[in-house]
Length: 401
Image 1 (cartoon, rainbow, N blue to C red):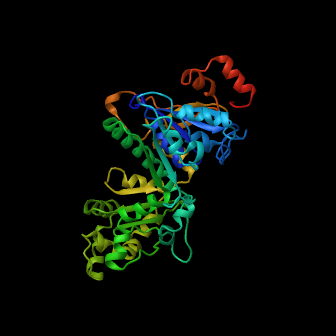
Image 2 (cartoon, one colour):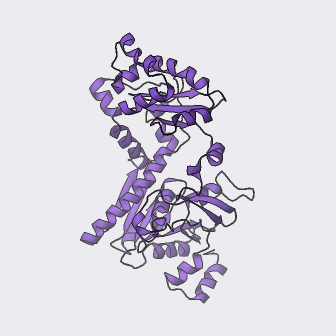
Image 3 (cartoon, rainbow, N blue to C red):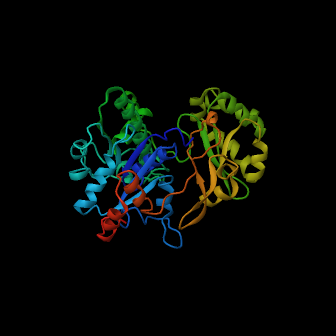
């Protein structure tokens, strides 16, 4: 897998989630991704969670498989070196990925003057270029108002828009690379975090629901909208989520619980079609009233045994600790994961790319994050051709580290 993009060189100047995730996505597919940071690290370098020694587990998690260069970006000579790295020659180079303010030395005009086929991927907050982060975009999306049980908005702890934006950045870079290969022309590709949110709200049909039906999706707790799905408490204080979208899943749920006949009685009583997902959604409270005692009388392990191989669509609720302790999918039993020695931290369970390419053989995309600045000298020597004496001078002058 790590050979798929092995001829691609991307430079990343970034912080936080979206752009680092985009760069890591490319790096895990084999691209040489060089992250440039100011000396001492960028504003995300110490972000929580951190190891006991202060190393950011957040930073190491989002910068796996990259190379790290640190420069005095507040000084002209440091900025000139950064420009040289970004615009260095190479048929499959000349890519910049950033979510930081891109003006002056890092503006597209300045960089494309040094390499006219430069491709720059730039993430902004709002379409007008003003600042925004995941939480300030999410609050306007409608999702916090539809989450929970009403009364107050509920912010999701998952930075969904950052994650989606990072994947859009990686996709956009590959699309722009194909365009350059056909035409020889570079370009600046922009994406606004707010537009990622707005596109998603539209793509999921919520904008059309307002326009066509005059409807606004209300909060409804953990119920699945438009079909049957709800969480249930078990006898040992755990919770399970059960979903029945298709008729096959609905029949499997009734058979596995032994409640098929009682569930079938709900249709005539409520005048709904229980063979239709919309009908089951309308009857969700009655369905749940029948199912709840069954779950309450069984432990989570007993629920799992009853559902094993039965075709029921379900899953247990877990916190992060329970996920690590209980779920075999979150272990090296899953080819996604491998134990990797992370410098300054120790052995970690590290995911590679979720993409699978069985025809390429064994996965080789499990690589740790670099120590900050560890590749500075090698990049200056190999990519820019600087002699060791000049690199030493730059160290002495505090331009590189």
